[in-house]
Image (cartoon, rainbow, N blue to C red; front, side):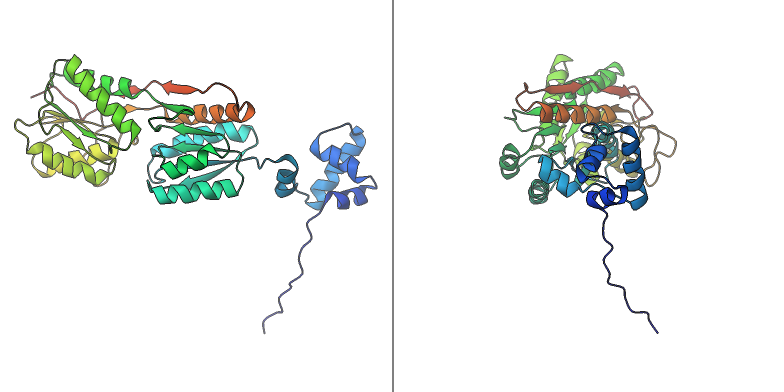
Length: 349
């Protein structure tokens, strides 16, 4: 026979309960627990012991009503399955948690409607600030942000963005890749770009065309293929590039996911990487080595690494600074990239 349910609500201990337990005034307890105002050391120790014994925890709701702050920050990322984002979020958390802020981590899936709903939800929760990582901000989202708490953009920014921004040096990254390939004798170099609506993709494409001109390399028709940062776009782009005459001898991919899919497609069609064609990525998402369905069990991808942890830390510091001084000058922080040469690039055949 089942036992009857006990619907008795467990009462959460309050400052009044602690004051009664210690035989002190509520005001004295409040000063001791908040650390504001003087309390006799012996009484303070007594109050803290009683609070710990009774399981007292300060009400975040009451504190928010009193201070008009929730000690929370919203962080939006584009794709929770992408391995570059945990490092960025870790950097953000290292900074803001030291300031006693809690993170609400939100995944937008590159969906404008989902992004808008998440921002509305964060504003309803009265977060103290927002960090948007790799977000293509819609006009509707931008309007909400402009009328909300301080925010910082990471990796992407609208063309007319006038707020704080943190990102990698995209021009430097493309230059590092092209100079590496050029030094290996490659002149027919193709580029699979990111989506046109991404500011990062536009910056890298502009840098690619400028650097190719500087190096004296032409860009034949078909050598620029628009992708979308998703792996499957690598297969479509690789198929299009193999149909070019002449074929490229090297391919820059928009990111590491696209690069691996390109390599997989080339192997399926009888081409070896890097002997027949060199391939590079962007982000260093997989660090040294990777395996699985990609035919590179003992190889590493030549790619450019953006300083992911430092991007997050810089964004966290920028947001805390903006929250402390809303009228401070706008900050743009650009961090250098690192070229990691591994096994998917070789001299042009």
